[in-house]
Image 1 (cartoon, rainbow, N blue to C red):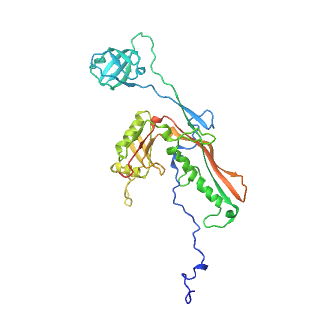
Image 2 (tube, one colour):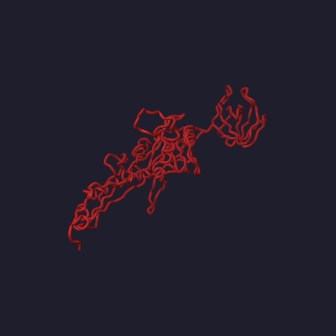
Image 3 (tube, helix red, strand yellow):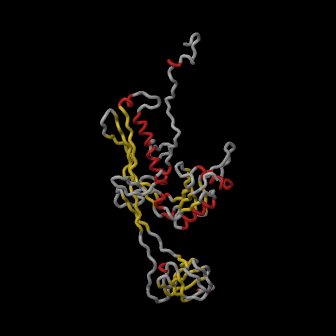
Length: 383
């Protein structure tokens, strides 16, 4: 045994511990998409009967105005084969390259032509797969009525999904004194749910709201059964048109602006770009020389939060849960979560010396007009 002078190094067995009463966590707790898109969008989608575990909404589109040639034509033929003749009718003026053509009759996928080089344009040869565009309509005076292309509404649907987790605390643990935790049950419920001022509030979201938010990226629709869970489909369940695979290439400003243009030309009005950390830095570098600034002598660097495009203003949202190799351009007004049962705490029955409380909520997701949105995938995370 040590003798002589006593030091802090020799009397360790009787020393009280110095422990902070503050318990901190480094895990991120943001859920900004829940806040931005909302979780109570039932009225936005005008659901006639709600709540239902399966819900539907209707979408329609304008008739197409273009088809393509299915064979080469010279400058004199008066019978033109197209991929979809239903787009056109008698009295239409169509455009192929810079030539206007007056259509007198449509039979199946064949246009019968009265005038090549209509309106002073030049009749010309055109190659297979060239676009045939409906330029305008010019009906003959006193001609009988005629009907054109019509569309059928499409029924879209999704399912609700139960998101839940319980906390089980023994009777002894509930009264055992601890540093930084006054109430074990309350502490762990708070980790599951987050702050008290709303689902998805910044720096307040717990595990369950974050998992709800991640359905935007990961959700896949499933009707469910007695042995398999019902699940909601997320963004990728619905958006299939404006999808661009960069196959590992570095993202450029042109990639972003081209995708934005695709969405806009299709009839959308997107105003939010969602990305991860690497792409967020790349975007700042794209526009670094084009920043509107306020003079300061104490701040260096740059950060882009909003981009002005040819078609409108687009906000940039850095999102921790966005897959690092993906970028989303969306119109938030056309999508969001639906609340079937809001998150709530339930007391569950027990058979022993313990208490159980469960947080449970049930939500769905809806997205209208998939062509109004788009995403890039396969984006390089290093270049």
